[in-house]
Each structure stands twice: as C-alpha cells, then as structure tokens.
Image (cartoon, rainbow, N blue to C red; front, side, top):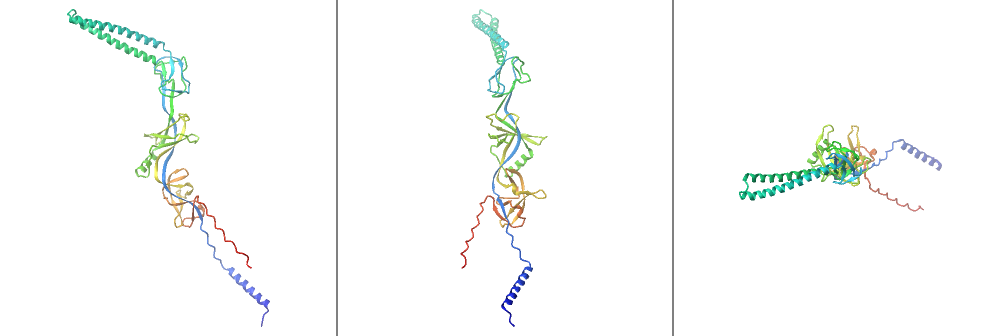
Length: 393
C-alpha cells in the first residue's frame, strides 16, 4: 500500500517535532562563568620617611623683660609700642639731674684727691733727700711716705666712686637688652619707677627665628628606639619639620628639631620637643596653635598599601585580598601601625610583590579565581572582527 507524497511529509514533520520536544524535556548544561576581573596594585619596597603630626604652641626665640636699674621719673618714652627695636637702643629716659650732680661731686672729689696725692708725693721725695742728709728723723720720713701712699689710695677710691656715679647715671637711659619687637609699655611719661621693681616696663621678644614647643607620647619614643635598634628604622640626619598653621595652611619656611627633653610629664605621659622655624615676616606670633609634621626616621624597605585595599573583618582585624601568581584570590590579615598620606605602612601580612585588590572586591571570594589588572594600566582595545565575505550566489 502506498502513501501519497503529502502524507510522507506530514509524518516526517511530526517525528521531527516529537524529537525536538523530547530534547527540550531534558536539562541543558549551564554555560561556563567568565573569570572576574579586578584592579590590583603591586606593592613595592621603598624608603619611607616616618613622620608624626604633633600639636604645639609658638614660643619667642628670646624674651627680655625690661626693668629699671635706677629710681626716677620717666622723662621720655623713645620707642613705638609694637615696633622693632635693636639691642642697645634707648627705650626710656629718666630724669637724671640728681645722678648728674652725684657724678659731678664724685669727679670733684677725685680731682681734690689727685691734688693731695701730688702734694704728698712731692713731700715724700723731699723727705727722702733730707733723711739721706741726716736732716730729718727716720720716723718723720716714714710718716711722710705713708701719707703719700694714703693719698694715692684716696685717688683710687674716688676714681671708683666716679665710675659708680657714671654707671648710675647711665642707668637713667633704659636700653633694649636684645633686638626684637617691643610690646605694650606699662608706664607713661611722668611715672615714677624704682630700681629692680617687680613689674617690667616693657617686654622685648625676638621672633625670627621662633620656637615651636611640641609634645609626643613616650610610648612612641620607646617603639621608635626599638625599631632603630632592630634595624627597621634609620635615624634621620638633621630632623626636619613642616609647620601647619591653625587653619591647616602649610607654612612656607621649613623647621628643624632643636632638642628633645629628657623628662616625661607624669600627668600626660609625654615629653617635650622644640622646633626652630625661620619667621622673617613675623607671621608666627607667640602663643599661636600650630601643628608640625616631624620626620623621626626612615624605614629603608617600607611597604605601602593603599587604604582602599584594606578592610576590617567581623573580628575587627585588618585584612586585604591578594591575587596570587596562580590567579587565586587569597585573604591576608594585615598589621599596619600608621598611615602615610592615603596609604598604610605595612608591618606584617603583606610583602613587596603582592598584588592587592583595590577594585572589584565584591566579585571575588577567597579561594576563587580572578583576573588581575594593574591599576593605571591602559586597557587593551579589542581586536576588530574579520569582515564578512560577499553574498553567496
């Protein structure tokens, strides 16, 4: 029995449809997932300066409280308050009439003593001639010689009295002991001042250079010394300091550490440091609050890790995700003691050559695979597909 051509076509289509339905009823194999791509930074060993930001106050380089050494009435004030004065410049002039009179009296006494000494010397010379001729007794001669010596001693005494009177007269001219900026005067013309009084007339301060007094924790000093003894840190040659003003603006002139105190304050557990800073424009004034970035040493083979590559686990430990040379993702527990700019200075957990993931952390898990792309690398352009051939005929 034969079937028409249309019947054979119908049976073939029905069989093909059944086979397709049977194939769809089974589970298809899932496509392979692509390896996630992450951005990494390869760590390098490099010399890292160890700096510490410390707060402090500015202190004058030199301070002189000017007090009178003579008693008298202020006749003139010869400086402008707040102006720069030079060492030896006259600041106040006291009424010196009584001191001039005392000086003149001392000078007159000295002149009289010199005249008496001259007369006594001549008498001693004549007595020497007479005693040789047996015309004067030895006792009288000795009295004459003693009188001449006494007259010469009187000259020396009156000379010293004259010098003292001149010194007291000079004290009526109150001068600046140092060069610097004069502050506010505590007296005016006509005021009575006394010698060595408690209250200063004015304070002169030298502000160029100027000191910055800082305080640092003694525990940090101990750790720094341990690191130096272990060879982890090299001591800085001439410790430099960068000054930051109260509003955070960097100060143009670099500072230099002058000394560190040898005593720890028991109330704060810190010790004092003093930095000297040039201050040519007198921008820094005494008592200003500033901060100083002090370079304490250098770690010759320090490793810096970007902060965005360091996170905290549920226990609070600092961790980093690293791509191994085999392309595996590995979690590391990191120890870092301080920040340098926007990076962590690594003490343990990471080493030079490690590739730390900084972007794409959400795509990977420890133990998984990852494709590492160095941060800042120029991405490669995909190759253009081959042009399709012409239409088939």
